[in-house]
Image (cartoon, rainbow, N blue to C red; front, side, top):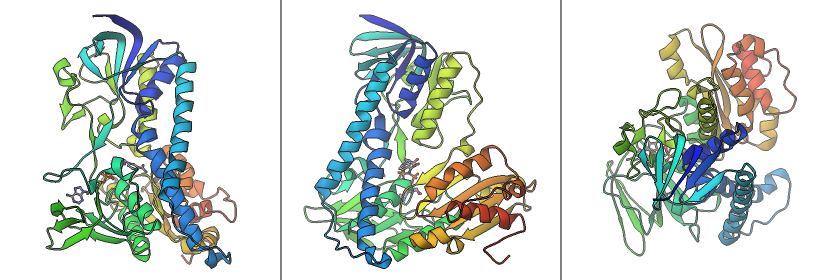
Length: 457
Ligand code: NAD
């Protein structure tokens, strides 16, 4: 068997893997990055980037449709999905080329093939043994389905939904989490009639309850139906339609069913367990230093239990590279990682929900919900929503939760408040530019500090 070696060998070239590769190269390490598909992984090819391109086309369609509300005379002629997909593909291709160039410029060796961990220091790829001083597992995740529901034909996951050749007239989405509400948003803006089926009692159940209520209200106004607290018992299809039976007894028909019930880790048949890497429900068990149960084997990204977000993958990749280089970086606080859902309206949050904060700090937790009805810029944009602050008994901001168009752009300030453990009364002194949506965060800070301005206290 031929062999090659490097200081760091990385299995998987997605957000976590390539970040580990680039940071290791910056730190002077030789790196071999093994990828069976294309560099960039789910985020670049099937996730963040293509879906946000679709969401942007959806926003443009909505702007055209509602232009007259702003006094602009536009005739909305419809959505040309072929052109939408071509716009989306152009963005992905350009970023992919950029990434390839970057990896090349850092002198990282990319091996194209499917790797298998064969020992604490070795990965086998197409009959070649690649050894490293350290090995980083970064093999990502794939869409899950439900027992008895097979993917194919009219039943799709987000992978196929991204490349559908036409907009469905009627769509049912199983799962009202992040993928579910983003696709509901896109398809509704493109003209589809959309029903979401969510097993939990509310949409985006991982978010603060107040935010779910606002989102559900906004979706109702958009005529997106949400059936919450119900489960699917059967999905059947023929050449004309697909039919979904719910445990409530309802039977729904549609052209397409999107299964968006979570993503599972890609850890099977890659030699992990055989080499001694402990798994739990398929996820790789790690310490807070992202070390697996095998010395010098690390794991990053969606295979590590927790938030499945590209920017968490980047941060973990950087962390592991620095850990391997002996720099002892600070462990990553998962709660401080910002979360943004790019639906219309958007949802953005960081830190603890009110419920989680009350569990941790007791009844003296304070909250304030500032409705965007009091925010001039939001009124100009004709968006509704809210900014909710959760404040610990010490006065420190421990949660920021937002809903409304463009609130994803406010998460930068919100995450500084949380991560620097800022005192709400101190932060209330920061002046926010008028008129911006950022003012809503400022007003919420003033309100929670007992001196509201544009709201009656
Ligand atoms: P998710 O966990 O966000 O949502 C899945 C939803 O499906 C949950 O609300 C769950 O209660 C529901 N569900 C589970 N079983 C069900 C059933 N039998 N019937 C009805 N509903 C059921 O997962 P997702 O939306 O598939 O997204 C996968 C991952 O990708 C997430 O971790 C997400 O954070 C990530 N992602 C992030 C973004 C973003 O950050 N903007 C966008 C897309 C995906």
